[in-house]
Length: 328
Ligand SMILES: Cc1cc2nc3c(=O)[nH]c(=O)nc-3n(C[C@H](O)[C@H](O)[C@H](O)COP(=O)(O)O)c2cc1C
Image: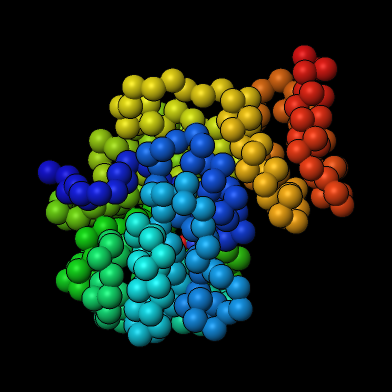
């Protein structure tokens, strides 16, 4: 039997991705799917507590929205979770999957898989201060510690602290010697391990992550787990999200065209530029909108060559779209 989160639909989510899933991307993604759960980029507790900027800012349209935190100090994580709750986030997720050196030196991310008791303490303190789900995103193992028993010990310890939702990136991480990018490609995917975990912990909500590129594949996964998290493909080929509500969530509503989505995004871009924002801060996220369509290369090239220029505005986008039509 699958467990069911009462308020959050976890059927499909877009993975937290540093530098990619910022608030502009998320606003754009939300235009395509009302049901997809969106995650912020990882934000460290240090940035939130000591940083100068507002690291928790988002647009209200982005709900349902989860904040991903990076950290390992239970008290600091609790402070940030409370802030996130007060700011209206729907979930707080703890990153136990990132293998970068910078992250390891801060003693958080994937290396924390080796210290499940500390993760449990973090979760426990986070849960005490906020009435929203506290979830964990992790890998299936680290370095030589990649047995199923190692994974279940981690899950057992963290679930006992009150975490009932896990997102599992179905590959292990090598903490030394591989870059974060390599760690998303080289260790082999092992979906069966995540399926086994769901079978052994039917009461927990389990989402699977890693290498899933189509809604058809997501649908197959949903026979075995509660949710699917898609990362790179949802960024590079964002129009994938336009059919999530219908194909995966059973909603009876029309699928919006790419042009329609672009049209809906224009007022947001206009406002951003009027407030002094750079056009390319948004266009970099929509460069893949027409992927696979005739003229998509022209669209890409025009935006890459023009959107960063001083004073560039919505007209650059209209021109890029117009150029596509010219070659078709
Ligand atoms: C550019 C980039 C940045 C990422 N940043 C994060 C992050 O901040 N937090 C995190 O948990 N995972 C991060 N990841 C990993 C993704 O969340 C995801 O686990 C991974 O890409 C595998 O899923 P995919 O094969 O669907 O892309 C990042 C991935 C990419 C490509």
